[in-house]
Length: 216
Ligand code: DC
Image (cartoon, rainbow, N blue to C red; front, side, top):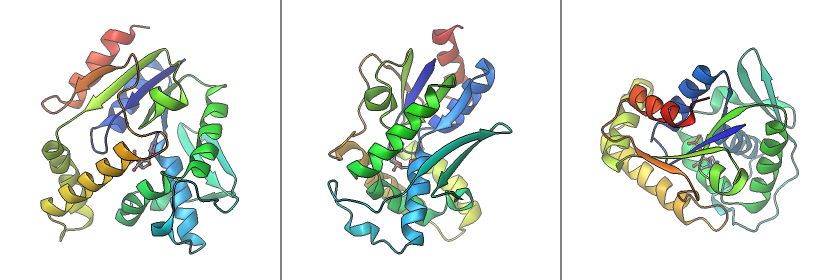
């Protein structure tokens, strides 16, 4: 069974998906990490990410998803890049990588293969709309830009004390722009998805709403 949770950056999808998966004894699958892993790989080979266009042919790479000791492991050409996933540079460049149709095709195939063997709560941008349009339950987690920026700012300033709220807000706005207007699989509310606005809700309240609907 697939439960999809889509939404913009910073809407809390990943935290909510993690909680919901624990309650249901499903695997939480974070689709953004696949794009982050590919982004790390492209940086490693000095690929000029800023020049990537949606239809560009990309260097060949393999993408493998494993699940060990309750942990999702993503390997690009056999290498685990997880230590760098949350670097700010990756967050800034990853949306560009995700616009490319060849990257998306490799990522989609890996996700669909993984889903054949597992019950998943998957969070992302195109899960209920493009990757798993037949997901049994679909959610779209929304949140105001201001609130998302505040949440990100609190996290980021622990790693980077010089960062400002204004910068974070500008970065999120730029990411929204790319995510919503990309040529392939843009961020949309999937057909049949339940929209939850988390601006004034706690994580626990969002999780409760989802579990009330899923009831399994
Ligand atoms: O959820 P995240 O911030 O880790 O995602 C990183 C980037 O990957 C995001 O900018 C857009 C892209 N992405 C995507 O295009 N489709 C998904 N299903 C998940 C992420």
